[in-house]
Image 1 (cartoon, helix red, strand yellow):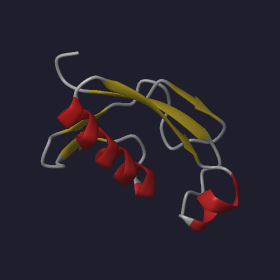
Image 2 (cartoon, one colour):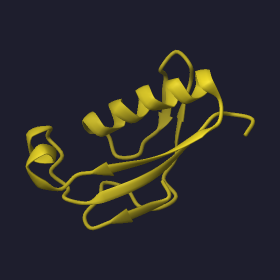
Image 3 (cartoon, rainbow, N blue to C red):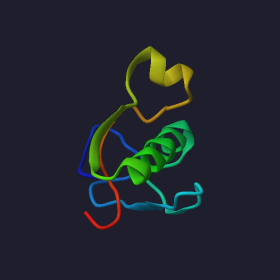
Amino acid sequence: MVSSKGSAPRKEGAKMLVWPDGRTLGSIGGGCSEGRVTLLARDVIKSGGYLIHCVDMTGDIAEEEGMACGGIIELLIEASGN
């Protein structure tokens, strides 16, 4: 995790390892946002390179999806070997 603002489940430096088959080690905070990030990570593994991804847990949409934290986290998703 590159940065966090407001109330977030984890802080800067949190890491999660994702394998091509979807297995994970570690956590960036759980919930539906972690599932989405796992899917994004699998795409990055296939294509190579990296992706900066922002998860906004504020507002009505986040509340509807069960993200009660109210913060924003920014993640670096990077394929192994980069």
